[in-house]
Image (tube, rainbow, N blue to C red; front, side):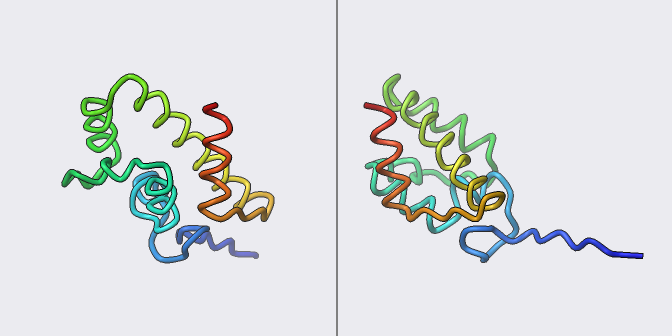
Length: 104
């Protein structure tokens, strides 16, 4: 009988259990991406769960910021999946440039 062990550490940083809040907010790579894109303001809160944080960001951002934020979430998640399933690793700068290109 074989046992499958699921790794719950972040595939990018390996530091913590990987959940959506970690992927988008706590992971050092995500923080770098947000910083590169001048979205550091999204850390000006004390929420510690995904739903509360997202609700806060959408209540604070302009329509343009909210649209960009959605695109940024999508590409952070897409790059996470590329790393996990295709072993393709992009730096925070690479991901930031992908986001900027997509938004343009």
